[in-house]
Structures are given as C-alpha cells and as structure tokens.
Length: 251
Image (cartoon, helix red, strand yellow):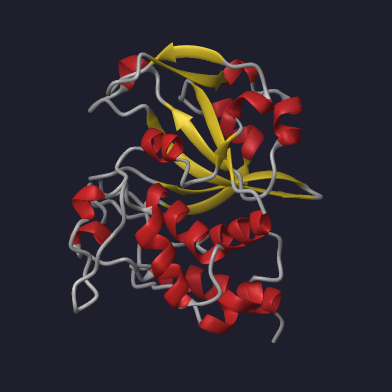
C-alpha cells in the first residue's frame, strides 16, 4: 500500500474513532522511515496532517505531562502536536523520535526512569517564546517574511518583534514553506500568566494554497476541539492574536 493511500485510510479511521472519543494514532517504524524520502519541511507538514481529526487535549497540564510519558497520541494540544510532528520528521523510527523528544521538549534534556517515565518534565518548555529563543525549534525567520514591529514583552523580555496581523499580506504568505512553525502572539492585555505566545501551528503549502494545521480547543473546557487543517489566510483574518513569529527547520 502506498503511503498516501495508507494515510487516507488512517484519516478515515480517525473520523470514526474520534466520535467515540477513543482514538489513538498508531505509527509504525516502517511509516516513519518511508516518510524520510520527503524533504524535511514536507515531512513536518506530513506528520502534522496525520493528526487531523484527533481530539483536543483539554487537560491544562497536558495529558502527556500528567502521565509522565513522551508518547500520548490519544488527544493532543497545540504544543504536543508541534512537538510530535517535528520529532517524527527528524527520525527514522520510533526510538529516534523519543530521543528527539528528550532533546527538544526540554530546556536541558529529558530523562527517563527504568519504566520509560519522564522524571524531569519540570524542565520542559512551557512557553512558546522559550521554544523560539532556544533555537531548538528551528531558526526564527520572522523578519525575513515581512515588516515587524515591537510590542511589549514579559517574563524578562522588554519587547518582542512580531509581524502584526495587519502586515500579514500575500507577500508574507507566499514566503511561507511547508513545515514552518507559526507562533501566534497575544495582545499584552490578554496574557494570563505572562505568556507571550498563545497558540502554535504548522504550515502546509501545496499547489492549492497555504494551510495552517493546528490543534484547536480550549483548555479546561468540555469542548469538542480537534486538530484541523484550515486556510492560513482565513485563519489570520479571523484571529484575535496581535501577530505572529515564525521558525523554520533547515534541511
């Protein structure tokens, strides 16, 4: 079975099982290795798309953190969705994906006990802005895409540079590539715990357009959120964020 047909069938399964709220994505080593033939950015988008239809993780902490595990593909929030998509894209098999996670999800490095449980999730990235500044989640390309402005920062940052919503024109959109990670920046008066980034998603670009793949939902609420793939332009038009920052992994 070719990989596109396999994924199409998998997405059909997602739709059925998500209704029953019992879906867990199964990813084989052979599929991880097969996806390696794609360029890195397209691999990231491929894995991001594989989660489309998956229920949103409403646990404020994140179920993967609460369970002290690396892999919990039953429900995902926007951060785990980005984590997992990138980790799979950087790997040839599931073991390499776990190693990538231990490197990238943590400010230093993650550690596992003898049962495979994470013992230092307190050292994880909890804020999108920290992911950007670490350099572990690609090179920031925000200023290369469009005109930036400075807005008030927080948590030790006097300001951050963003492309404001009104500056995200078609020239910016055309410069985006598959696999780019978009960090949506909150207005300063809407921040709750000093967070600058309020949401994260991954770009998919093809001959038909530019799409945002993201885990959409509300933490702590009994809402029917899920991973969706939407027009990036349409999302920008209706979003309540101040603007964006963008990172990109180089091949």
